[in-house]
Image (cartoon, rainbow, N blue to C red; front, side, top):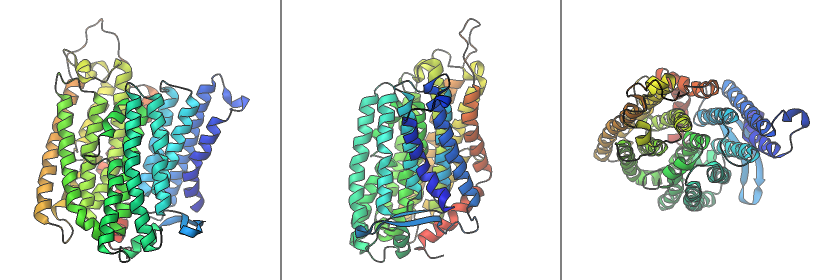
Amino acid sequence: MQFLLAFTVAGPLIGAVAALLPAPPGLKGKSPDQAVLRHGVTVTGVILVAALALALGFDHDQPSRMQATTDISWIPALDVRIHLGVDGISLPLLVLTALLTFLCALYSYFKPPAGPSPKGFVALLLVLESGTLATFAVLDLMLFFLAFETVLIPMYFLIARWGGEGRQPAAWKFILVTLLGSVVMLLGLLLVGLKAGTFDMVALATDNGRGLSASLQVIAVLAIVIGLAVKTPMWPLHSWLPDAHTAAPTVGSVLLAGVLLKMGTYGFVRIVLPVAPEGMHVFAPYLAAFAVAGIVYGSLACLALARPGAKGDLKRLIAYSSVGHMGFVLLGIASMTPTGVNGALFANIAHGLITGLLFFLVGAIKDRYGTADLDTLAGATGAALYGRAPRLGGLLAFGAVASLGLPGLAGFWGEMLAMFGAFQPAEGLSRPAFLTYTAVACFGTLLTAAYLLVVVRRVCMGAKPAADSPPLADVQGYEFAAWTPLAALTVLAGLWPAVLLGLTDPAVQQLLAGGKP
């Protein structure tokens, strides 16, 4: 198990180096470009198998215990250690990251993004995977920061070199805003580690802030939350997200929404809640206020983009929807209750599955129509996907109803539990304030349903095309292979939520209790 976790984290880095080397003559095949893309599929497939083996070998009777741990001294002077481990909170995120990266590599093999040599693309994709997996596996504050930052460079180049229109400004905005937030976060992490005498996240969580004064916790939480909120992204620190999603290639958008946004919310649960509970208690009402503001703002922005004549971009609309969905995650965390935090972790996974599928679908629509502009897609009678490409239209409608939180699908449970947590927040938090936030969040669910149903009506419905209309390809075999796991898991998580909640709940209970069983 120790080897599996270490290999899962470091394997993509080894694969990235190999991708840049010349391929052996026997592996080049007819096209060196296809050979390196095939290498990406192979490496990410091996990492997915390793992550699944890790999940199968995980002791599900003790999900609150750190398992597959490695603890090696790295910088003795600062007591920084190469400390890895996985519990019920991080395991689902590790598997989600490995799955989405493999599906992106598989999709890119058949539909390579337009841009420079595939060598660089595959290497960056693997570095991105390694950094994301490391973020969910490391148990040292300094290693967490390094892994947290590792993903920025590959994502910057994926947007800047393989993105679409406006990619350069979007890439620069992404890197500058997130780096600025990370610098502030680093100061908070250093303050905690140096004052507590250790950077070990397990020891800090067990101490539960008892070694840190209340004022120091407040300062540290403020600094750390800024960095995490930028990556989440929390309104009003979200401005980089719509531009980055709109300009990014399809697989870049899938990974950005599916796993990179989860790094910020994971940091809230793994670091802020257990390490500085008094500081978090001070900021929880404000965090909840920003969360519900993001829910309403994201939904209103989507409604504005969806209306006829707005020239709204479908990718941009899905990006704004992420601001709203991550607002539910932050609301659950801000409640500081097991119910709310479990809902936040469930919503994290659900958002990764559903929004990953939606970005795949929007990319396919853009490839077929040459645009993601809603007015152009709708035209006079609607894009009529139900009539022209029924499987593609059906999948888009499925993704939309899953995203709006239809009961029986994954999107329902996380948002419901987050609002239940806010309805009855932790002791000491203002219940009238949180009741107000819950009411606003409920209103946000209605707005979410409104804009997603408008999108389905405009893109999927409409008159049947004329007989002389050019044919529109329906779902291809490689698209079916890349999208089916996400749709299937969305249904599975919706019908059997105990699969996830059985992992996260014991770990969350122990985390909020200060590491005590």
